[in-house]
Length: 389
Image 1 (tube, rainbow, N blue to C red):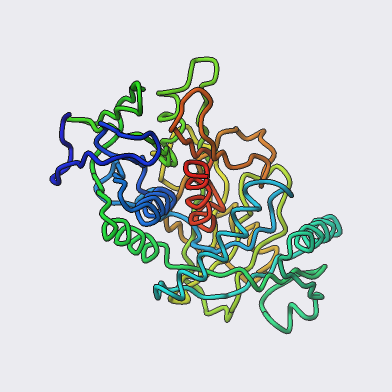
Image 2 (image 1 turned 120 degrees about the vertical axis):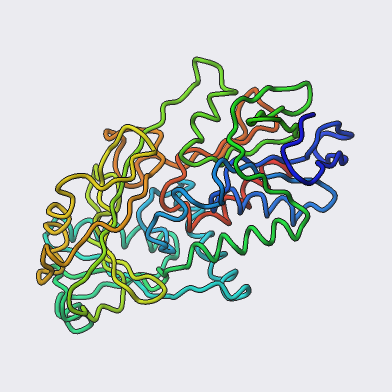
């Protein structure tokens, strides 16, 4: 075995496959919020096992996990019976509980989903029915009630209020999960991109530059790199194609808007995201985004030409006073997609959380875009159930 850690990998008995000669019981690939949540869940809940997390960058959480809206979603947008709905609703509950217990900064800001046209009002009616079916609290506000609540906001056909929506400091969350993993005896190997995977008679060998580790179980939580990792073990006829949908966020430099809640346009069918919405960070600063721009790779993090002009058009539908010169591109994030632009828009493609057929002990987490942050703890819980029942 080639060591890739400063600490010496331990050879412990695996509760999954009996006496094991592998270095670790669990190897989690990917140190974003989902990978951290999964590794922490396995390490904390199963003492006597051993867990290593492999992260290709110099720090955990530097990709999608730190380039998003930091919104705790309520679970409104995704189809009934989907993993996105189930894990988002459960994950929000778990996140709020953890934030209160561990003092992770968060705020229950609430959210308004705004309708400007009759078709958009019909969309809100469908969201309301979905919410009732899943015990998600929602209530309608008239255009007049919206204006009384948020004087600068336009909602010609009213809005839905989601009191369960909030915001979280995603960096503080990941710091907590990282610390909990290490406190439970887990190891974290940074600067360790996976270059190859070899199935063994029992478990897997995972190669990284300069070394390798072996593990009974591998959880592929590599986010933007998850499809490439999955294809290392999938037969040619089942291999997947990764798609990348960039979103640009815009800082706001105009006069204070006085907005106290998150503002979302009604979702549009076929749109790759939830629209260019207004969010607040923990410090109360306003930002807009993300927009939708399909790109050729995960490394494209430069705002495209003309993105501000397009964003202003969308934002002015619900905040008519916003001016183009008040917006500036702030940062970009990339959504990991497993279907391209034709894939049905918001909620059109479900999360993939599965033990891969013919690959015992290999769990793939694919297409974990929004609401991945909200769902992270629930995804970890589900992975544990898949492995341990």
